Length: 296
Image 1 (cartoon, rainbow, N blue to C red):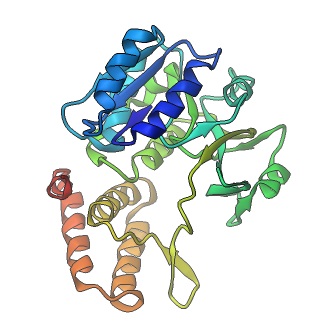
Image 2: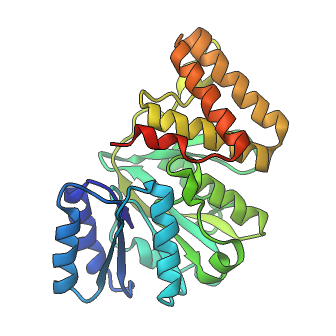
């Protein structure tokens, strides 16, 4: 798992994972937290032989954390790795349910549900073979075949992946910092022919993130607006990289047009347009350093 300045959540999750019989060991990558996380992890390591911590000297974001953590797990001989952020909480039996599909899948995970309303998904699922997006657990179960929705997974929220897949496709793109690194890894896995699925009877509880996407273009579509300049910069840069690589120039151009429309007509913000243009120029140059000025 990857953590940054959320000690209370981390303590809760580590306690749960240490009690999970199917886990061989728990590896925690700390992204240079300043809230006492490092000290607590060192103390926990001394008291629990199953917990191991790697304390980074710089904040490398979720992308850098998962890059480092997955490499570390493979170096330690893991055949299967279970990836998660510090704010999720697997339900009892989640890992056991996922492991029932071992051997038939390469990259698979649970549904991620709202911890305050477990009948709803935190991250909606677009069903394969169409444009339908489902938000309710009832719809997810109805769409499943033999307990699985194939060809879709929500990375890195409690997903399992095999050592063989990591060796084939490599590690997450650390330079992305945040936003799009998990999506890119899934796309890379799919391109390799990996067997991907969501196991609908396995659930991870997660705090609500609210409605994903701000309506635009007279309500016909949405845009992932965030008030954070750091998140927007990384989203604009990394989305353009992913779309050019996996979708082609037309998809990339459509994303640029959508962004310009949103900050010109839907939520007028010339400064955000300038920031977007800067991020896109960085993407075209292959420059992944521009986000650092937003870090504190």
